[in-house]
Amino acid sequence: MNRRLNKPDCDAARCWPQNVLHAVLVALVMPLIAVQANAAFVVDSARNTVTDTQTNLVWDRCPYGRDGVNCASGVAQEMNWSSALNVAIAANQANHRGYSDWRLPNRNELESLVQRGSLFYSPDFGAVANDSVAFPLSYAIRYWTSTTYARGPDSAWHVDFQTGSTHPMRKDRVDSMRLRLVRGGDAFDGWRYCSPDLDGDGRVLPTTDALIHARINRGVTGVAAIGGIAFPAGAQRTTWPAIRDYLNLHCGMSLP
Image 1: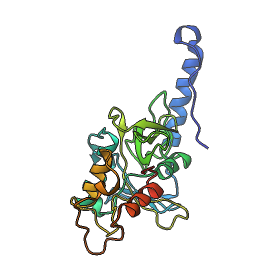
Image 2: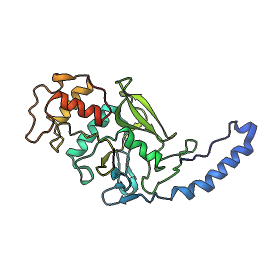
Image 3: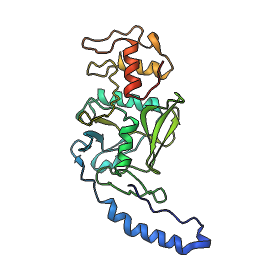
Image 4: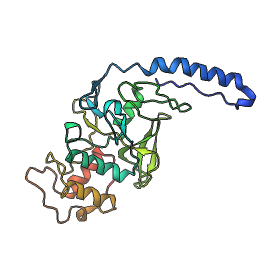
């Protein structure tokens, strides 16, 4: 269970003793729990990845935009939902961290980090409440999932690592919206995988997968979404119904 130290429901002028006590508790307790890495996480410092041995999901150790030792280099980037999907495609083309099968995590996958207590933050102080060893510099902020909000296709689910909650957000929102890539998870029973490899040929190509993604993000569906595309040999999904069903089942979309 995730725990947080709640700030007293009063202002400093009326109840400074409670506020002082709260600050002292945080100062004493937070450093103790911040260094306790979850035993299920295996950190690959060379590649900057974290493997969750309970789900077999492999996470980018850094929020997208950061890199280097303990993710200390660069700046975590904020982006809208469509850009987050395109980042996964670009990461695969660039063999990011030595892999070419990254994806935007679905809602279940990203929520597992909160449920496992790995990235939960104290909202009042912005201090890591758990696993700063596995996931350094992962600020308390919102992260996109690939899962579209069924009641409003113009929104997608995000996980708020400040509160540990999950909510839908308009897909065009940029401010405070970040991305953490994931891959793998094959051995985790019942997990749904949302891969940018829409045609299932084992690659993510700009002339097929990325183009279909771009059309869908513009609201194009049906035969028009795949019109004029020459699918490569080995593609497993070459019709709109097959691609639509894949996205609806594995990515949480509700495409007609």
